Amino acid sequence: MAINFTTFFTKFGHAVYSAKNMLQNLGPDQDTVIQSFVDDFDSEALDVKQTIDGTVARLRSIQGQSGGFVSSLISSPLQAFMLQEVKEDLGKNVTFEEAITEFLDQLETAGSTVESSTVSASVTYGGANTGTGELFIDTKNARGEVSQFLINETLTLTCNSIDQLNDSSTFTGKGDIAYGKLSGYYPGGTGIDITLSPTEPSLTSILNNPAFFDADADATTQPANWIAYDADATGSLTDPVSQTLAISGTPTGGYYEIVLKQADGTSELITSKIAYNADASAVQSAIRNVEGYSNVEVTSTGTSPNYTHTITHTNTNRNFSISIRDFTTGGTPLFTISALITDGDFITAGRGLEIAGDGSEGTTYSQEVFLSPDSVYFAHAMVKAQSSIFSGVLQLSLTDAPNGTILQDRAGTNNAISVDLTTIGTTDWYHLGGFFRTGKTLPAHQFFRMNCSTPIDASGTIMVDSLHLSGASQLYAGGPYYALVKGETQFALDDTITLTVANNYSGELQQWFDRIYGLASRGRQIAHSGSPTFADTLITSS
Image (cartoon, helix red, strand yellow):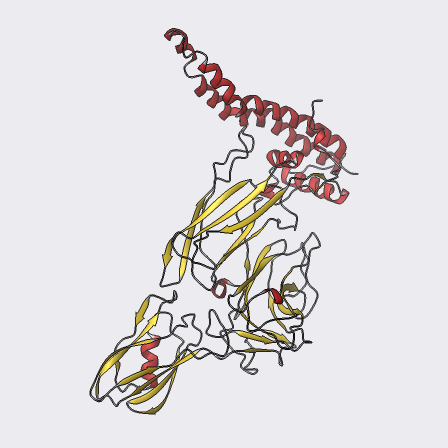
């Protein structure tokens, strides 16, 4: 057996017609009418005006109760109707949750559709912004369908807090007033109060060694925890950034201090006093005691006190030039500090992954991950060209093996995002990011893969840093998924990000199914198209 959807949608359309009329007669369209009626009596005698006083307030009270009227007269019967239809079809008692799931599953199997609403989302950044982070938005739901339940609203996020020590910032924003789904004023806005901070990819990722802190113990030019394919000739870790501090002039006493930078690259941190003749171990200990520098390594050459200390920024995101506060005595001391020594660009760990093209290899790095079905994930990488790229595509994807088949979501869309490397520059880091959606079932093993799906030309080289994969956040039920990611430059106070979500709500049957049956909160919607099985013309009097 199967549910008779034609009968169901016909009756549902009649009920929606009644609900719309009830709400229209009690809704915002009546505000002007009632106010005009009240204004007509402004010039009347006091006793007449007193009979009119409170009319607007009484209207507001009635409007506030309108949702209850529609719920008792329309919504509750329609819920009971669906429950009965499914119960009769299955020949057994079911809960309402079971009924709505069975109804939607049968509707999906039948290939039935309703009319579409036109939805979109876009992000713009304040023209005076300092930060180079990006806000990523996805209008699809967990099943890979463009969500019909986005709320038409412009949301402005403003940076109102900076933590220099931890190189973090906080944005806040507030949505427009939200109304109940059975209110005559629905939908209004989201009503949300949102607070979010840019993601630090290397700290929040479910990947191991996402910023390439560590080299493989055996293949030392390759990152630990990553499976490399076609990478021996084209992919390799750069050396960690370092700097030399040369002491000359044979000081005989006193001390010096090393001035380091906080994660924002501006605010200073200062070591404890370092003896004029301190060796590598003592200098390393002083630096490691400073917050954020616990993994720094120091080696030395020369003889006391005229040492040359090489400071290597191993596993740190504080890769800034040092300076010296000199309190040594005797001799003619001179402190000479080299420029930062690096063989490639980086963002977080003092080193990056370099991929040098040869025109043929599809350089691939994979890592096994453990995902959940019917879930949304955010993937991201920072990419920068070291020279002009004439061909090449870099891709992030989910696969069933280290170099296997790309996994698809329920809608049959590949979980893959990519960038044409000929379009990125050599000056700024490029944000390669997007959202993946897992299917109802998953293979025994799942992998996150980064690969050159089109080989880079023989003269091209790119740097990759801060790979990221994490569960995605949703702005509200039925709303867009989002992720705010740090860039090379931290956000500053009063930087703004504006998220504009548009929905013309033209698919009325879809919208009313949500208002009556709560589809958005269940992560479901009816399939929709421009040539629907059930058109909105069904919303008519019986």
